[in-house]
Image (cartoon, rainbow, N blue to C red; front, side, top):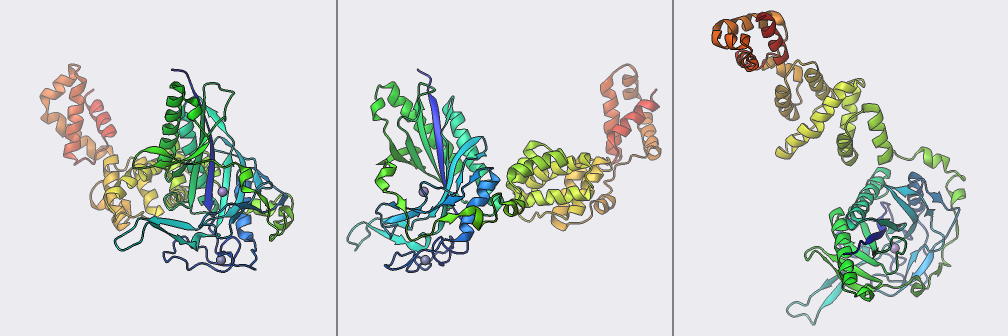
Length: 486
Ligand code: ZN
Ligand code: MN
């Protein structure tokens, strides 16, 4: 079989989290369950109504652009994208064509072409006929019609194999979702359709000849399905290529069917001419730099929340913890805050912080999986626990046991260790006595050790641990025995 290169480009729509819709003052509430309540003459396209652009939504798009080091247009405008469908009451969607708000920029290894702002459509429900009904029918809910929708388009990127392409796509989508969360501009929940990923996929046996006919894959409502759909689509195309049916690979839209685990042709793709884009005469042209504080957006930049990339770098630099731990905190913002508070209690002592982080990302998360009652203790108590472990005052076994208690009662680990007699006996005075007792009682083992059997020593250490109910520090115990047996 020939080698095929995979080229992908992504288009991601994200609903913006604003109080009101894009061009009217209707509530933007994605959780509204009652259909057709957040509607008005503007978003229902009644004659004589005029749209007014939502400044907050424009600001949110600029924020995303600033966060990815993109170009923010000085001049921008809205265009009409004309087509008919029941979910678009005006007969056109207000979108942006020639002058997107954002162009350029980079995220998670992919170059970004543009980010523009438009309005969402209504949601349609296609239902099958039930007893007594005349036939199959559709219902349209206009609550979503006119909700601000941000569309990002990446450049086309070519990969050596479909796996790399699929991985790059899902990594990008994940990072973009995180960025939108961190900036507070979108909930970006894929299952709820607040973030919708589409992948343009094409293959070529020739690395430089690409993008001849690409397929746009839709209905990707998880990062997993992004990966699976791209891989599936590439395989489908390769098969056609190999069978000499290259001409059957056409520019079309295909939907990912999660239950069948395959893509299904939906429609042959329109080209942009078909939409007859033209500037919307109802909306004023925008001078963005002027409207949002000068050519460099200094004020906005200064107030921009920390991005996931910045947080990764800060965690690595300030705490020196493992990359896996950092990713846990990047994805679980609350847990990240807790970790930072624990680190503060430990006055930036990196050795103890690493232990604390270990106990948070493995033990605490593990406990939480098995016990829904488990809650984060106070950062102070968690820091105390990490310190006891670091200073060898308790064994790691005791550390885990105490953690299981403090996630329920948030008590002081030192207090628990004292009460339950879990403090390791490091003081050689008391331990010497016990060690001597063990030596006296185990003549045979001692003889073995003196004859060169290393394992005999560990048997003695084991007996000391037993005698002290595990509270002896094994290192100290071992050293004591060695000294006594010299
Ligand atoms: Zn409205
Ligand atoms: Mn769009």
